[in-house]
Structures are given as C-alpha cells and as structure tokens.
Image 1 (cartoon, rainbow, N blue to C red):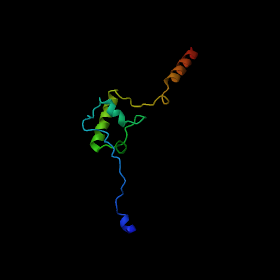
Image 2: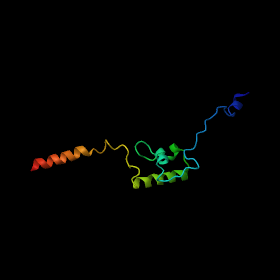
Image 3: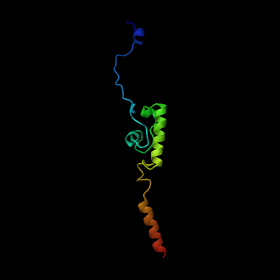
Image 4: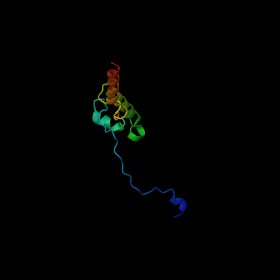
Length: 102
C-alpha cells in the first residue's frame, strides 16, 4: 500500500465514549444542589460550556439555576473567602483604638 493511500485510512483506535453530564431524567433546577455543584469550580465560579460538555440550552439553564441558588443563599457567592476577609483582626483593631482614646 502506498504511503499516500495509508494517510487517508481511519485509525483503528477505540475511543471511550464519555457519558453526558446531564441525563435525560435530570431536572435543571435551583433546588437540585447535587446537580448544580458539579458545574461550579472550587473558587465558586461557573465552569464554561467547553469544560462541562453541555449544550447551549443546558448551559443557560445551569447558569440561571446557579444564580437563583446564590440569590436565595442556597449557594455562597464565594467559596474560599477565608484569606480575603478576616474579620477577626479588623474588629480587634477598632476596639483597641476606641479604648485608647478614652
């Protein structure tokens, strides 16, 4: 067989077919936390459609459900916020300043 003809033959590799992330029976709803939490990163960001392997319609519904869950405080807006907001130190400083002025 020529090298030129060999180039056009399909490879014999078998690909493992990945299951879709949302089955037909799953309802995309703001109350379904087990489903919603799969599409949020560790920082609390909504993962992109390319990463999720969702259709455009499914991604829109997931985004709306996540935003509704955040507004109703079922989900936090920020997940890892211990380093950003340390309220313990700021309250100690203000209390210390007030006692020194008196």
